Image: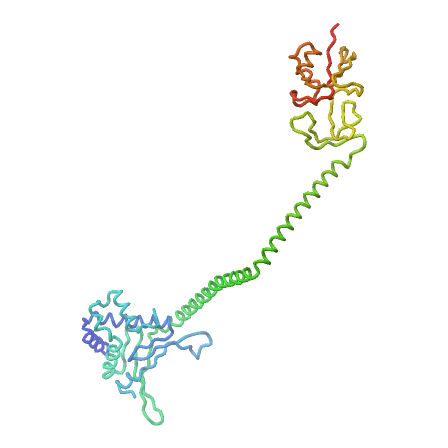
Length: 80
Length: 290
């Protein structure tokens, strides 16, 4: 699973146990969600920008969540 | 949450507050965003997708562009999140707008009166002499109006009192002198009434019992016998002279000084028995016993 590898890296880098790392990872994305409600867009360094965009297919005021990956991340995973 | 703070700082504040991470682990966590991006990158080296917890997941996608295979990362939000995010964002936006409007209204309510007061203050300072003069004029005008009204009212009262007055009657309406026997009345006095005595100028009017004999001088009197309800009386008309008192008069005519209240009672116009006026008439009735 990709998440396990991810959490392992977080544990190693931040010197946290796996349980704390998992909690940290979950609450990090919870906080990003809250920030999007309040700001409309959030940029996570090295990951990309999450933003709300009005749905062009809807006649009402309706927003959809979009993402633009950072160039650094794309380069690191070979998507250039 | 402040927009000036980085995502890492915001998260660390949140994580410490909620006891997710300890303060001594903060130093390492300073590079949280870098660590997360590194972890995501490492994950993608082996996988096509990467989950962002309950937020959604990232997926590698490929397309052909100008004959070349181009890769990108697509974000697939969590289905529940996608459902509620639009409503929550709209609600938040409308709340913020309402708050902004409220603040603007509050500011206007504070600023506009302040500006008006400031302008009035400046104008008041510049034209203070004119304003003072205007206020004084205004006060004088009010005072004048008040006096005018009072005068009109007084005139109206006088008119009302004298409107029905004929030559044979007089309206007495004021207190003439305190400490004297001058009558205090506000009423019509019939000048034809034989019990009324008045001066020629009609400036002093008294109602008396009995007539004043114009031939009598001070200290003089007349006597006559009158019959009232079958009883006979000696009626004495006396003119008060200098140094007279009711006590003396009673002693002289009734042979008993202590009977002076009877004389007072017979001459109702005397208000204060200690003060009797020289020249005023007194009527004394003495019952004649057979």
